[in-house]
Structures are given as C-alpha cells and as structure tokens.
Image (cartoon, rainbow, N blue to C red; front, side, top):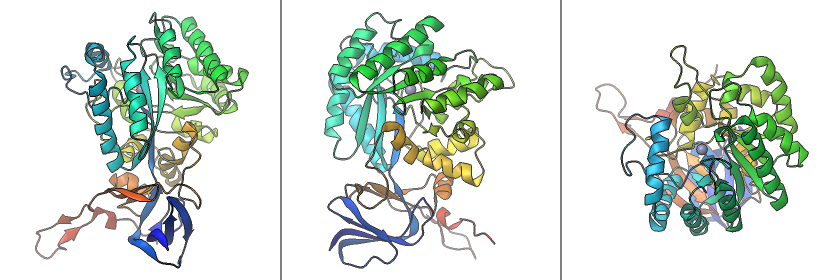
Length: 429
Ligand SMILES: [Zn+2]
C-alpha cells in the first residue's frame, strides 16, 4: 500500500507514461505499470512530473518590500540602491520575517522548494541575518533555505563588513558571500576574493560571489575567484553569480578564462531577468544584453544555474517566484532556442541548481525525498513556453499546494468551447 500513486506522468528526461509511487515521504517505485494500491491515486494524464524548482540566487531580506518607503520611479539600479539604503534602518525583525514567510507561500505555490538567499551583513544590528536564520528553521518542513553572508556595501569599503560577516557565519549562515567589483579598487576586489575564499576554506563552507556584475569588460574578478578556488582546494564549492562583464569581454581573453573556470569547477549563476534589465544602461545603441555567455559556459562543461535575484524589491518591481519565467527569459536573451539549449535552460532551474547548492537528495528517482511538481505541460520545453501552471506540489510525499488547471471557456460559434494552451504541443512528422 503506497501513500500516493501518480499514474501516467512524463519525466523531464523524456520517459513517458510512467507511474510514480510514494511511501514514507520517498519515491518508492518509478516505472511503467506499477502495481499496487495507494491511499491516493493522482492521474497525471501525460503531464510533466518534474523535480521541484530551485532558485540559487535570491535576496529574501529585501523581497516584497516594494513601495517601502516609496516606489522605484526610474526603475534603475541606482535608485534601487538608494531605496535600500533608506529602507535598511527602518527594518524590523518581525517585518523581515513576515515578508519572507509571505514570499515563501508564493514560492511553494510555484513549486519552488529550494532557495539560496543572500543576506546583507552591512548592518551592525545583523537584524536581517537573525530574522532569516529564524525563517530558515520555520520553513524547513517545506523549503530548503541556504543563506549567504553578503557584504553588500563591500568587504573593505564598509568598515565593519568583515567583522559582521564573521559574526553572521557564527550565527549559522551557510555560505560566504562577496562583491569584489564593488570594492574601491581592482586590488581591493582581488584581496576580498582571497580573504573570503580563505574564510570559506577554514570553515569548510561554500562561497557565492556577486561577481563582475558590470558592463566593464576589464572587470575580471572571476579570474581571481577561479585561481583562489584551485589554490585552496575549493573546487566545486564556489559560485560566481551574475558574471555580466563576460558579456562584454574580449573573445580572446574569454577563451583563456573559460578553461580556468572549468578547472576550478566554478558554478555560474546568471540572473536573466535582472541582467537584461540592469545591464547596458550606459549604452545608447546598440545596447548590450548583459547576460553572461551561457551557451559557451555550458559548452566548456561549466555548471550553469539560473537565479531569480529579485521579486518586488527596491531593484525590481516585477517577479513572481516563477523559475519558468526565469528560464523563459534566459532562452530569449541567450538565443538558446535549439532543442538542446531549451532543455539545458530547464536543467538550469532544476538539476544544475541542485548541484550549485550542493543538494544531494534531489530528483525524481527511487529512494530520493518525494519533492516534485506536476505541471500543466507535457515536457520541459512546453513548460518554459507556457510558464506552466503548477497543478500539484509535493514535499516529502505530501501535497502542499494545488492549483486548478488554466482552461479558458470560449464563446465562439462553431469553435471548441474550451481552450487548454497545453494541448498545442507540436507532433513531429
Ligand atoms: Zn543578487
């Protein structure tokens, strides 16, 4: 007797019409024609059962603060930074927790069950750190939250940042963060990379830099990140977020950089929604896109995971905890429209992100925790195309969110009475 038996599901790897049996919070059997009874049977109807979505780059201390204390009128990074500066002294413990919990409700409804969030440590009160450590405990039953100690104002530019970062790690923050391109000089940036990688090596932690989030082709901190990773034996544990300067770099230099990043097993975390919005702002025309070189990174064997970065905060008024929207944007910005590239974009919001965050218990596979999402789409490409409705979200074998399928009723004479956009998938041949 299973707890749940999901009949006739498609899986992201291309298997079709499989049954997925769940017991004791884990996937017990995944095959065609699984025999047995279940307390609840779900008919997937040939739709996609996917491992849950992962956001490897987010700012949960700022999310849903849009409008506090005022709206970002210009929509620019500079006004966003000014707004965050106005908001920071007004933050309270309870308000940060309430906004984070409210965001997590939305995330669950979108099948987003693992999140890596940076938390600003350039506030001597470390109020947001305290609040998000608390949130991490509270949401454990439904979301894995990984926290990054992020010295937003610069490790050396902000006089108390290093002390606060170490305090935050002592308080249980999981990952070491940094922002080398925001230090006063290139040398300070490189020094901050060395210091932060050493802290991570001493403490056995992972690292995730906001790295080279600029259109300046000479912003090359990722090179130092890769070199320090190898020097300290941190291979596979270091991520470079954004890496937008790579968009503008000289091709010859990039041909040297990519193998260095591969050697260091760096995880690249572009944030397509934010990169296309904030980069290229000093350009007239032609206007650069700013997103890093995703197809080239993938071709080099480098792990690429897409992050959302922002949702209704001082920097970005949009966002909906929707990782399919993130993948959809990446496909467009990166011109990743080949069949393989669209599949890779789906991996970048699922399996690749699990790798970047070091999550082992992940995937729709026998023995793994039964965390997954049933989508109103047949395959990953259709899921990206439609930003498909999350019909059911499962966590440890329990259904924690359900959404009705999106079906329109038509009132057209001589035409069908209902339209389900997920019925439009192409049939080859
Ligand atoms: Zn960020």
